[in-house]
Amino acid sequence: MNAARRPSTGSCCREELDNLTVATLITLLRFLLVPAVVLALLSNRVDLALICFVVAGVSDAVDGIVARRFNQQSELGAYLDPMADKLLLVSVFVVLGAMRELPLWLVVMAVARDGLIIAGVLLSSVMSKPVAMQPLFVSKANTAVQIVLVALVLAELALSISLGPARIILIFGSGLLTVASAGAYLVGWLRHMSGNGDDATSNA
Image (cartoon, rainbow, N blue to C red; front, side, top):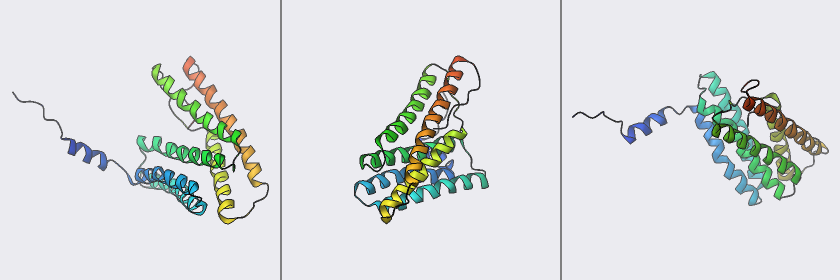
């Protein structure tokens, strides 16, 4: 009896590796930079943490340019890109909060917002109503302000400078955008779960 031939494990792995685009590999690099930034901060090497954070920011822009220029957009990349951004930001937020360089209320709000989004996605999947993750402007603005805030704090610590009230402005701006993006996500999620409105929610 002739059995259906199954591809070997090696060929499956090679096929998956072949499907990895340059843009996706750059995104994966940002995941590797997360422990590097955290370790540098915990080792009091803020200068190294700043360099790694800047590299991560540049790689974020580069992978987007590469994906669009060479038509390398993929579903995997669409999920990995915001995950890499949020993992880096949340990790640095928590460490800077422990160092008392960011207020704990902002750190708690940022972590709680991301936890709310993850819980909503998981719950909707369990209830067989998966949510289509689509970016909202307020979420993009929130991420942008968080990135600028972290870069400013790291620059102040690494270069021993003070940028005046800029840090306070960014802290409260980040807090307001965190609340706004969490509210926008919650409204979209409730509408989706009740069957009223679009499937769109917030980008993590």
